[in-house]
Image (tube, rainbow, N blue to C red; front, side, top):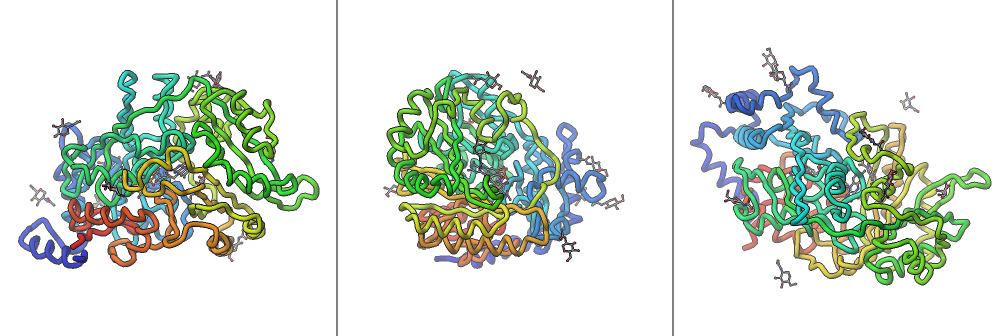
Length: 531
Ligand SMILES: Cc1cc2nc3c(=O)[nH]c(=O)nc-3n(C[C@H](O)[C@H](O)[C@H](O)COP(=O)(O)OP(=O)(O)OC[C@H]3O[C@@H](n4cnc5c(N)ncnc54)[C@H](O)[C@@H]3O)c2cc1C
Ligand SMILES: *[C@@H]1O[C@H](CO)[C@@H](O)[C@H](O)[C@H]1NC(C)=O
Ligand SMILES: *[C@@H]1O[C@H](CO)[C@@H](O)[C@H](O)[C@H]1NC(C)=O
Ligand SMILES: *[C@@H]1O[C@H](CO)[C@@H](O)[C@H](O)[C@H]1NC(C)=O
Ligand SMILES: *[C@@H]1O[C@H](CO)[C@@H](O)[C@H](O)[C@H]1NC(C)=O
Ligand SMILES: *[C@@H]1O[C@H](CO)[C@@H](O)[C@H](O)[C@H]1NC(C)=O
Ligand SMILES: *[C@@H]1O[C@H](CO)[C@@H](O)[C@H](O)[C@H]1NC(C)=O
Ligand SMILES: *[C@@H]1O[C@H](CO)[C@@H](O)[C@H](O)[C@H]1NC(C)=O
Ligand SMILES: *[C@@H]1O[C@H](CO)[C@@H](O)[C@H](O)[C@H]1NC(C)=O
Ligand SMILES: *[C@@H]1O[C@H](CO)[C@@H](O)[C@H](O)[C@H]1NC(C)=O
Ligand SMILES: *[C@@H]1O[C@H](CO)[C@@H](O)[C@H](O)[C@H]1NC(C)=O
């Protein structure tokens, strides 16, 4: 193993004679570099916000989706925001940041759970992609081209406007940006039938560490492999994706049913583990969501498990499948609703029936209203009932906590773990998202402590060696580095959880395309060549 340190050393030696290169961040020079490179056709100065602009902070906060509890000085190191309006703005930002040793944080939808797309403990620039959001749909070829600043809601709407039977497998939340979402994997309720977003990405445009725009053929297959699941921000700035759309029936069926502990939730959920990934057809995605609710009888806290389902078929057929495989759910025909794919995206977001689908295009700019901590896990064998009961006991210590249990199986068992950089495939029963929410800053320590406790309680029941984690469910607890330094040993800790056996190849790809480690952040992939 040749470590990153020696590579960096070489690079520094080479660059001593280069007048543009400096070893310490040079803010003044950076701004001058940006302004010097502005062009009359596409002036970057109109995309540049500094402290002198009265809208600097509001521009920063409009895509800051998380109320920070761990980083009170998060704006302190922010030098500028470039809200790119043109591809050349991205190139210029990369070139000027690199030559002046200033870090960039790339932000598309701003949904990173830990805010890693907009915070740093060293001077940095936010490269904001939200204005680069064009979408083109090619119905005859079942393809689409989408810029990274587009949201899932915008993509879904454009697809549905163009066709009643095309769709795209990606996440549920309409305000998530495709820039971060696709590069980290991107899963949703079509996963068992069609896999995840990266399985349908067929080309990408990216600005590399030299400021060059590359596509699949000019970047090469190994880099193209890496940005499909390895996270974009370790490799470059993704400008756009070309994706294959998938076919769905004009009418699909959804339902929501819930069961409290008193109504036998534990038994139903135990049985759910035995059927949801292995027995149910891949056309059916049945998510379970254990959460705290206030009990009906005495107003005490209890647990309810909500089951949300989506079926690529009729209500009649769905009833047959559930009655055969999970009669304990007590599903009734009137729980089932037939609707179009675009309407299912509204259903998953709990919009009331009849809501105008234009809400999928909303880009709320109000600051986040609460504090959160999320974590993830992968489960490979059923959790015994005693285990479930231990989990409930710990959950009940929170004021507000819930989980999503997302069933695997179907095509996820058939796609090789190394087909893309996203490795969590065969052998999983389901993936867990943990989600704690509180509104009072004073409750932060208590909630973070409880989250650690819950993660400890589930340890015996989930994947181990390594305990796998989903990159897109960003969680700083699984390992992280300082903002400006990539320690390889530490990177291997979080890297092996996110990427399993794909880590080695990701490090090689990184070493080949970004040997100087310009694209680095707290959980980036280090440039390390195998000997
Ligand atoms: C409400 C909610 C629901 C979610 N639901 C799902 C779900 O159903 N399925 C799922 O898989 N995930 C889900 N997620 C997680 C989501 O996929 C990730 O948070 C994703 O990284 C968000 O992408 P973004 O562009 O909005 O985020 P950002 O915060 O902008 O970026 C996230 C990461 O990607 C990098 N990045 C962003 N844009 C680019 C780019 N153009 N080039 C290179 N790197 C880039 C950032 O630097 C950062 O490291 C959900 C998140 C939220 C908040
Ligand atoms: C900006 O342009 C001026 C005039 O050409 C030049 O003297 C200066 O060195 C440039 N600065 C940077 C940081 O590139
Ligand atoms: C920020 O202010 C400068 C002048 O100080 C102006 O040229 C620039 O266009 C402003 N940026 C934006 C994005 O409005
Ligand atoms: C802000 O404006 C002042 C006065 O014009 C100028 O001296 C300073 O360099 C500017 N700062 C930035 C960050 O652009
Ligand atoms: C945690 O996950 C939930 C559900 O996906 C999401 O609504 C919430 O925004 C996430 N938390 C953060 C900090 O993003
Ligand atoms: C990829 O880029 C190369 C070089 O710029 C170009 O010749 C080619 O047409 C591009 N391919 C696609 C699919 O856009
Ligand atoms: C369960 O579902 C019913 C019907 O949808 C709903 O009225 C009720 O509030 C739900 N209960 C819980 C605990 O979520
Ligand atoms: C989708 O929802 C809208 C608004 O509720 C409704 O008018 C429409 O009939 C629904 N269409 C289908 C096919 O489900
Ligand atoms: C939905 O909202 C859009 C935008 O606000 C509006 O143009 C459209 O008429 C609305 N559609 C319906 C059916 O109300
Ligand atoms: C993936 O792994 C298999 C063996 O498990 C190997 O044959 C194949 O070449 C690998 N594919 C890639 C793209 O590395
Ligand atoms: C939180 O703690 C601070 C300082 O101890 C106190 O002033 C404030 O009232 C508390 N807030 C709440 C909502 O309890």
